[in-house]
Length: 426
Image 1 (cartoon, helix red, strand yellow):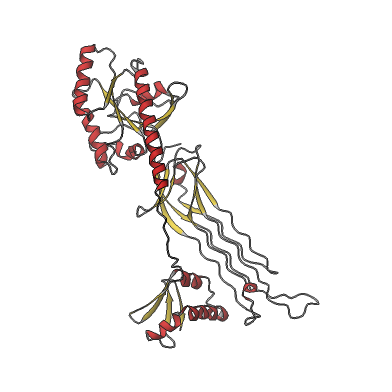
Image 2: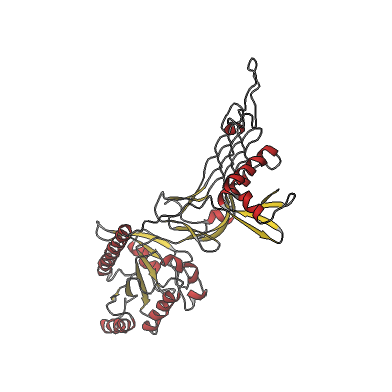
């Protein structure tokens, strides 16, 4: 299966079922009253993180995902069946955003779920509207429409350590040497076309997840080469392991090239905890190795740990692993402290309930009524049923909307618009 880590799809929650208009017609029962049942609720669209998923490839062809609709109400006050939610399994680390960039869900743990599109509520049947004033209502509500929107799915791998470096720096070889991963390895640029993950057991007590990020080149943060597509996977890594090929003509310049790409990315990654590793030292004498390490030390920020290894020969790996363990454990402690601080200082927000708020505007002779609740009532009204329309008028009278329409000069025969979808005569 191809590795796909970014895709845009359309999702549609289910519509609510319509309420039923019905009157009892049973033998030996005189004057049977209204008994139309309520419609069922439409299904939600729910995204769920699953550790068994590792790519978004299925969404290349499955571009429209539709939840089930609720069933209409029945006779004898029978409630229509509510639809099942549509559960969409995605890899851990998937971020769901609107096309304008607003984050709807960030799924970082196995089993974590998020409702991204709400199903419509079922409409009330005529039995719901029985009262002392309205003993035989001959109307029911329509079910609400489910939410529909286009979303972007973006997979950002969650790893403790991210391997970065120019193509052929030896990242895949190191990952294969340290972990159970088996990436493709060959002596030509861009062997790694997709990120690879491997679990590294350091001392029998500590394990870290390591990601081999495809080779970056100069200009990757601007969209050149393969690296731009995969820089997103470095965003979530706690520690960056920067590999430099010892046979590069200028190891310091090589290091700075990748460092600049990390800095110029949309999220500045250059300040992440970093370990610099000079790779492929087999065959080099100690004096040359020391000189190369000095060059890297001058190019890297003060205090950066620098190691010389041979991933192929296994040279210097033990010391590197213990350094990785120390950096990862420190990063985990910082994250835990940050999470605890956020929980301790979360502000208590008291949001005013403005669902019942409304506004009447007059635009080029048209009277437009807007507001969450009144637009919801309009959406649930069957405008072909006079009793249903009269109920909507009664609601508008109670809320003061009718008074405001008169104040703004509405006259009989003019049209009232609800948002940009529904209308009725005054």
